[in-house]
Length: 353
Image 1 (cartoon, one colour):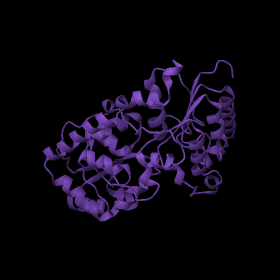
Image 2: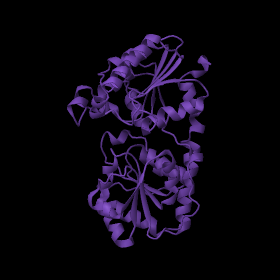
Image 3: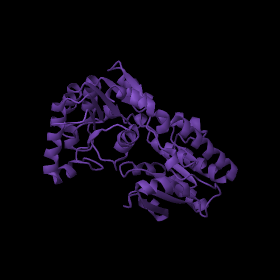
Image 4: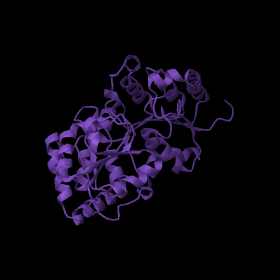
């Protein structure tokens, strides 16, 4: 590989996948430095069925990873995993072949042992995460829960949260309720089932107020009885930045599991970018973000009815104050503009200019 760039970013998904977009592509767009990017199949996911449909692209992706290691880049950023087929060898080869290699992760991959199918059990993310943390020169964790675990295996761990660009989101201009009220959720199909955790609360709020649910994500119905009062908006870069401002309350129910405690609270930050009042389960970093926002917490399923009704019954000025505080906190503590210098320092990019 002649004339290879000195900086490489390796991620399992393409730009349209939330994790890769937030943790890799948005940073690269802002550095002003040239990075070559390997995104495996450049799709939103790398499920076994998708891999099986693209055997040639799969072979090319595996060859590209070997070529990157052979090129010995000066800087390497590895996000989550190099290959869905690897048990850690691909990650180790990339990290040890680079002059300075950084491993970045934003989910509790160390506790993902491969539930959900044979292919995932053969190459579990937990095994790859442990290998990557061991062989990286530095580890970037998306929150303190992940950093605490990584620090048990590596002496150089920094926390850089998943960030948003508030300036690109439409901001709510009025907090008067729509008629009927609009509750909202944004996310991937993988997490949409979390709304079923609060199915009874949503049904009761709908019965009492007529409130409807807007889902910004997939247009495929999957929520059973909730679909009778659900409106779906297909996710796109444009819709995620404009549709949130048209809602009245953002929702983020999360199961209290070991894996969920490692999540980075990204939905809350998106709601904050839009100055949208929100309610969430105080699981993991969510508890810290909710506290900073001054937003309602709903620890248990039975808390959600009162939390939603309380926010809907509040005066518009109270919802506006919540939205404004969430927006201010998001800008000051979770924006790319605030964290870019520290991200560049974590990769020691100055030495490669």
